[in-house]
View (spheres, one colour):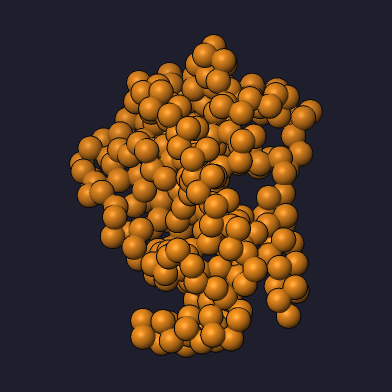
Amino acid sequence: MTLRQAVVLTVAYSAQFAYPLSTSELWLRLLQPTSAFSQTQFVGELRWLVRAGWLEYQSGYIFLSGHAIDIERRRASAQRASEKRKQISLVVWLCRRIPWITGVAVTGSVAVAQARATDDLDFLVVTTPNRLWLTRLVLVSLSVLLGKYRSRNNTHTTGWCFNMWLENSDLGLPITKHTVYTAYEVLQADWVLQKFAAKKLFLLANAWVARVLPRGYQASMAQCMVSDDRSFWRVVVTGVCMPVSTVANFWAYVLQHWYMRSIMTREVVHFSQAYFHPRDTHQNITSRWCAILEELS
């Protein structure tokens, strides 16, 4: 893949979300070309693509030709996302009071300020070892009591959807998720609660992202907090060695898995990882991306 192709592919990927990119955003989100290149070459390719009519540059944004309306769409989506983000402080407040939670990140459309009116707040939750299912039981129960939990059976547009769960001893995403879509999701995650460098550990466990989006990965790593390793390992040891809570977590897993088994579709549920994504978002996004590229060809 040439640098020119990488630029077009990256801009086309964002076009399906009506998300024109600034030059700096495009640089960080750029898919990795086959050969190394400099910033000067990058700018040169942008200028060539604009002159050739493949791309347009307006109001500080780069987008596919004929997509100028996406600038206003992006601004409107950002405003909706800002309104939805007002709920985050309450989620963080609750999570801080659950001692087994070591990290919380906003994911999905709100994380990149690109929300539709019907979008909820999606969260990734990281817990200590042997506490995932006990934590989920507590957090979901509190959300239900507050009337904020969004499940497949309701359309709560200001609801909370805790759809990704990881224990901090098992943060690596399975190889089936090593895709362009997931690479973007990993880097776009907005960490609103971190203990023991949760974001850094998550990125290190998913270093494969650096092969897909090297500049974005490097920038994200540079922003990571420094961890207190002694405190971190104390939490890990405590999580493993407290038998009562460990047994409670096991039975919480058994009961929740039993409850969900009749309604599960594409969800992936393991003891130390859980992904509650009933729709094949990856396939939908990839299909739209391919359709845009076909229109360009």
